[in-house]
Length: 187
Image (tube, rainbow, N blue to C red):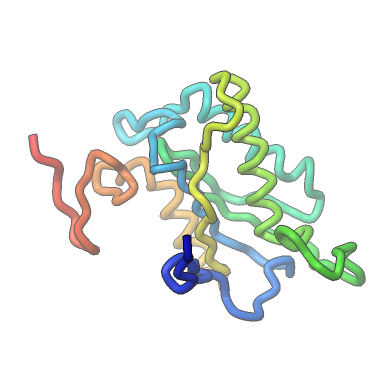
């Protein structure tokens, strides 16, 4: 079968020539596979984590234990996605230990942090549900380089208020979204 490389090529969402291992603050969003609600539910504007949601929360908090160059700021585990602010507190200096033909994300980068988190959560959840190869996460993730204190505070507020706005959230499978216009679910 001949594959159309243009049709199957994924467009990068990363900033061209940006070093995602350098010190700075990054806003991360990671969605579950097929946006399935795996982590719990929002009740009265508050996120209630189930067993899988607690696994995701524990693994997120372990990030700083595993990676001493990272600090975590505000985060929230939602039913089918998570948002978090990751701060790389030191940049890579000197050799990275990478081979000339790299496979996978740059060590100590946002990509490596997200990959490690997703892998750990997937392993633990699949151990719990007895399904070793079942996907937990969608491919890739969204990231945004936070450029100043005002932006940082806006993102913190967005994260904290995310459960309050779940009924209007485009990630909520109970909602129907057409483009940027939101339509309430029909009853």
